[in-house]
Image: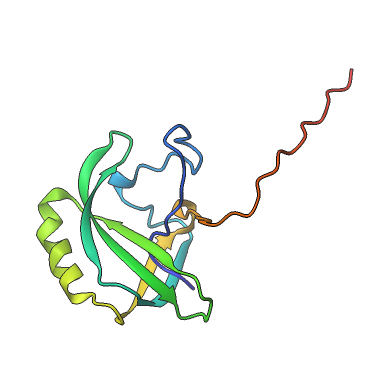
Length: 131
């Protein structure tokens, strides 16, 4: 019921935490997709982001939306463009104003989850090897 790329917080030192997805190649449109209808809580904008395994700078359309599901969560969505398509991204961003209803769609295997206010982190004991 959701669409678009959802922000996650993998560390640079953990490139395959989410399957080593090369976002510069674009999403796998044959994967299971998640569509999220929502309302923009801020105007969309185009930013430059280091993308892919080679960390190439590319334009990214950035959306912040509140899902229509009634959950009071914010979804951060990004759509990567090629450099020649930057003007297209900027034109689209100019139409996506706060309050606009949108649906974002993303492959589930690209989805990341971000918890900005974790209450605790606990180590899980490693089981002892039996001889």
